[in-house]
Image (cartoon, rainbow, N blue to C red):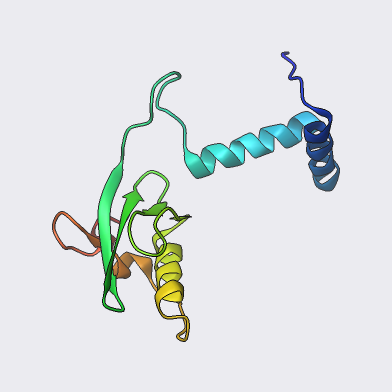
Length: 131
């Protein structure tokens, strides 16, 4: 078994999580890593960059075109233009709600992201490539 050296403050934070989850410190780290792998994904093989699975998408809302990148493997949406450029969302619907909230805060922002976003290459709704 290998060991890690942590600064005291990081060790204290890991142990705080471990106590909250009622597990060992090692198990808390494993859970955090598992969560990271599920959310971000991992390279196909060690030492390789992950395949670029990004699909260019856009939405026209409130007279503005918002461009983004949809990641098929994780379903994440990274906004690349407009007021939310640089923001990342866990799902197309989360990204759609973010756009509506930013551009028109006076309306309810609940949106279905699969029909809100369109594929830049062909203009079809994102739902046409929904897994």
